[in-house]
Image (cartoon, rainbow, N blue to C red):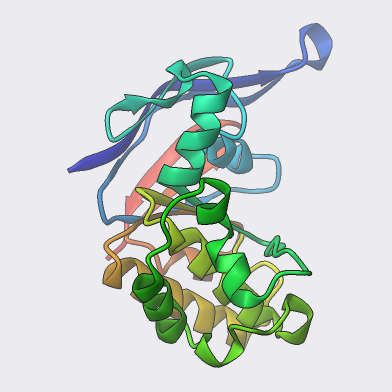
Length: 226
């Protein structure tokens, strides 16, 4: 079942001599439960693609549909609510709040929406990601790998339709990268999630079910991993 589709998705920055076509008529579709990696060199448009898919900035033209909802037909307030409920984000910098505990960081998106917190589900998430013994710790008491595990749990907390990961292993060493990627793959399988990840690391991209390559804002290759 198709969970995400883009139609002629385009983002242009600047104009005249300074115009940059960051994304040029991108057409992709992603199935529910699929793990897709988006790769490309620096400045290729992959981060722009992720921001547009996540509703973080509006396209110059084109459409993003998630579960058949055209997200850019929503008002700014409705789009912000939609992001919190339907999209989980994992960033390279973790973006944990330093004064909140591990558990509070994980539950934060739910608290922002004043949503009921499924304590049993959060407990299960923390146990699965090896965070139960750390739930009262602050971020500065954790290793980089542990902080990224918290970020993964936070992304999954609201049971979103899609997880978007922006270079999730960019700050990690090789051993921790392998551990985090294994956990990510197991997490999305266990919780029936769809993951879209951008990365410049080809070996990390090989974990995906499918790889989409972007060069100069254009989709150049759609490749099925074997």
